[in-house]
Length: 431
Image 1 (cartoon, helix red, strand yellow):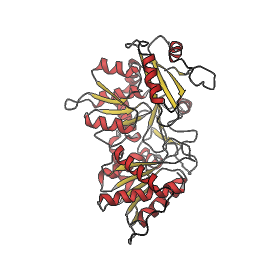
Image 2: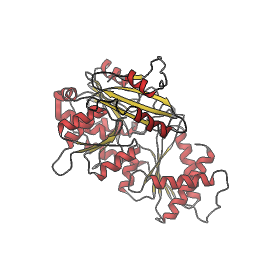
Image 3: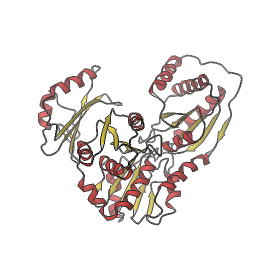
Image 4: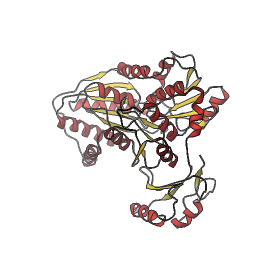
C-alpha cells in the first residue's frame, strides 16, 4: 500500500472503467482505520483527475457497499479495508457493478496493468475532471434492510462486539429498538479497530458475556463481513454448526437442500448434512468461491469456517449483519431448545499444523497426499493439506472423531511441522 502502488492502482482502475464505457461513477467506501481517509483521498483525486466520477459513502461495512452497488448503478466498487487486521494495515476489496466480488480474470487483468505502469510515468491530463459526490447517508438503506430482517422482539440478552469497526454506527442505531441488546467496542478512533476485540477474540467476548450475565454474544470484524457467536452456557459456537441450523431454518420446497462451504470445514458438518438430508458442496478456500457456487447451485446458504456467512437471497457477499439477524431469528425459533440443538450436532476434534513451504509447494502438497493416502479412516477422519493463500506455509488440517493419530501423521509426512510457542509438534486445538 505504498504511494506508488496506490497511484498505479487508481490509474489502472480508471482506465478499466473508461474501457468499459459505462459512464457510471466509481463507488468508494472504507472502514474506520485512520489511514482509510488518506487512501480514499488519494484514490478519489486520481479517479477524478482522469475524468471518472466518484461517489464516496464514508465508513460502511463491506456488505453495505455491496448492497448499494446492487441497488444503484456504478461502474465498480472500491472498499478500503484490511478486514480483521490491526489498524496499521490496510487493503482494498473490489466489487463489480452487480455487487459481487470482481471476477478473478478481471482482477488479474488489472493487476497486470498495475505491474506494467509501476515505476514509469502515467498518462497526462485527459481534458476533463470527474465529479466527486459524498453521500454518507447511502448506508442508511443497508441499515434499514438489516432492521427489516431482525425480529421485532428479542427476549434473550445479547452483547454485540463491533470491533471498533465499520459496523459500529449502524449497530448502535439498530439496538436502540431493543432493551435486551447492548453494543460494546463501538467507539472507533482510527487506531482501535480490531484491537483486543472483535471476531478474532471470541474467548474474550465469551468472558464478558458470562461476567456481565448476557445470554449470547456476537462479534464482528473490522469491515463487517464476518460474525462469530458465543453462548454463555455452550461457549464459542462453531461456524459449521450454525451453518447447518441456518440451512434447516431456510429450507423450503422450491430450493435445493444444498449448503456450500470450503474444503477446510470440520468433518462433523459432513456427518450432520448426511444425517439431516442436506447436500454439502466443498470448494477451494476463498469467499468468492463460496458465493459463486452457492449462487450457481441455488443453495440455501454458504459459509467459510472463519465466520463468513452468505445468504444468497439477501446479499451478494459475506455479511456479518445478516448472520446476526438470522442468528436472532434462530433464537426466537428454537427458544430454550437452542442449546440442545447445538449439542445434538456433530463436530470432530481438530489438529492443525503449518509446514514451511518452498517454491515447489504444489509438488509438496501432492506428495504429502500420496504419503497419507492409506492413512485415513474415511468414516471418522479427514485430512486437508493446502498451500496458504497469504503465508509461505503449507497448512494441514486433521479431523478425528475419537482416536488422535497425529503422531502417525507426523511420521508419514517425514518432517516435523513448525512448532508452536508451547513446543508442541502440532499446533493443536480440541473442539
